[in-house]
Length: 199
Image (cartoon, rainbow, N blue to C red; front, side, top):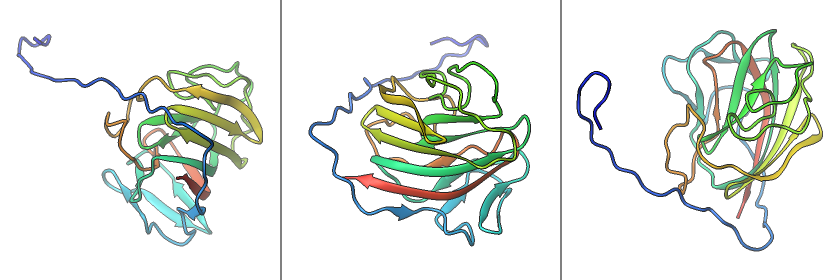
């Protein structure tokens, strides 16, 4: 391709895998990804601003995203979060598909708001609480099919994610990937991060 600056660039592409799964899911043992004490098992993608206070994983200002050292294929993820007024974050499944976190209480649901698979799948309803309140996601990802339970309400049910979200760590959709928390859009807190692999 020839870019707007006149330079030529070569690129290649591969067809995205279908990621279809057969049969009923078999769940493994739950894994606690955040120990509530330190950042063991996590790494910042850049200069680290994340810290642990009173059992809470905190990013007090915009900075690096945080990525789990373990990678996963299919799983159920429980994660709790708390944002400041006007703040924005997200949880990336396999590091590739963002479930949006944003201060959106009172807004109509949309593909860029809380509970959405960012850019692709809107939630069925807006379940955002007030800034400063703890909230939760229970997310099941199997192949490309995702279910999102936000604050104990099912807001996306077994929908297909068509591709990677902007900000994804890579486009290798057929490979396992980490859990990534977005830390570059404002203050955010996390706790009780538990993942149950699907075998």
